[in-house]
Length: 593
Image (cartoon, rainbow, N blue to C red; front, side, top):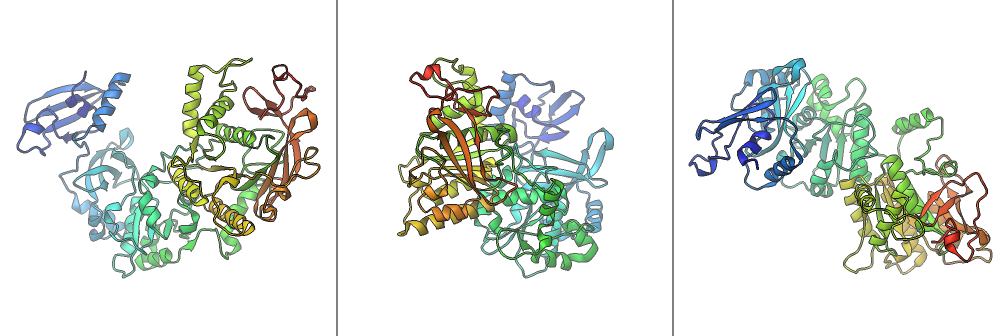
């Protein structure tokens, strides 16, 4: 068992002074940092100038039990804060650097910028650095250090929140929130509005912009959005002032999708002056203020110029003019349909495999592309849905049967994977689900888990208080479409048919078989039906509506179904017996919903 003193030392990653766990609790000056820690190659040497505790701790990789102890130590209340604020100041150097960036002393002092000598690795070694403090100077959660003579960064602690939160006004009512890509840009915007009567709040992200689109994100990189969810929800206008380059555009789109494009505005920097500080240095605070105030709504609704879509058009051109969405995981089906943001309406006769196919599709896209899904299944208990997903993931049945059942280890692995890629929107209070409750919970899932797919199964179970069924359905679909567009969400809406044509057993249904068919036909981006053909019970995916031909096109495709696991697959080349027969154990591939 390692003691608290050594655990505290192990959590230091640079020469520093911290509270001594051995004696600080018994001293009159309990806040005095008397424990000195010095990094010496692979060891951390410590010495307390009060109680004379001394020794060294090896930095070799800790054992599993030691990692557990360290985690518990860091979680325990009342442990010493190892983020040490520097006592020395380098006012002249900091003033000169900030002056070169056109940021006044009043502004950077307001944001608590500090200085110290820091180690930036072998390439640069020790250098004078400025520190951007996250949290208050009394209780900082982290300090990001940047060399005054270069762009090298290091950190004390880990910045996991917006920078600048402590300087936001208490009352954010009607105050726009500007989100920048870096701390210097945050200070630049603050400088631009320092002498203005216009109220403008500004923060910056803690970890910069991603170099490429993040498809397999568990929410960790954008956790700062979740931490600030109450702030973001309360803001009616969020201005995204990211850099005018590839990573900046990706950051802007990712924040917009998670927060909701409906409340997001974007700043138009140029190639020559690509960020807030570049504008401040070249053209002054007045011009930067003008650019921030001239922010335009992110494309969602309204009237725009063709140039507003130049990046998207360029992507379509470079993709060969197709602009296809993501693969479904079925090679034979990808020629008909791909997965992109929008509304997918799925219908079909009861028992023809609508929910089963959507589950298989969700698992495929999660495996292939790292998509994360929010599932609102109002006819299937969550525990049953989870075991179906486990079978789809493992390719083995959950229950005993004629084929090998998944092991406990395989189930455990599947559950961990499902936890990473699925969340479930369940009404545990017994109330009938409303569309608004689903939207609210999905917003949280987008912000927290980076969800990009939503399943509502079926829409018929949603509570509707509209007197007119037709107008109620039209309004519901409009809201789902707008919500999906605002968050770049692929939404699959299951709609049970209420009309059974005379030939329903010989050909697939389409949108005309759904109650309120006019709205479903006109507002769906893609319309899909599942159909079991004749007596063979062979599943057919039928595309009966496509708004954009590069995302989907009308047509049909037969698939193969595996009863034991619930999996669909492309047809095998050899002949396949699709007849149901009397003995299901002899026909393991016949469809059984």
